[in-house]
Image 1 (cartoon, rainbow, N blue to C red):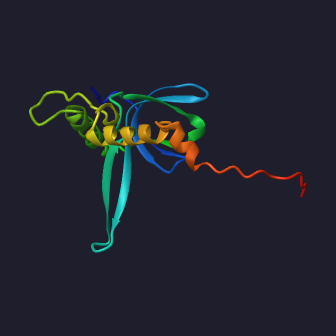
Image 2: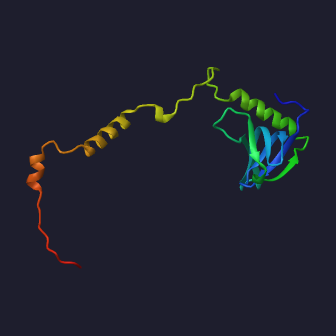
Length: 154
């Protein structure tokens, strides 16, 4: 759980993403971030304002720590103190909702390629039929035509 003694930072990556995170450690080449959240601003033309969305840096992992190479970072600044409570709330909400179903139990992820569907079976059968050798070799020979060539060199 995050507290007020952490070093909250905002950084811009060379890929263009803005990231809020807790800076845990750094060395000459890497930084260790905890709970990094990407910030996106979406312009709303009708109201002449921007809509801000925040989501985890990697939405497909339950890991909360990430090592980022410094060469992929354009700048790092301390997060403004007014945004720290908002960031803490967003991280807490995400941790609470991470892979939780409606009944409150942790959900086991089932990947699509692990499920054997009827469509996959049908396509597999079609490929097997195409790859089979003809059952009757005599029938195939009946339709073969051999034309003898000559010794002409082009």
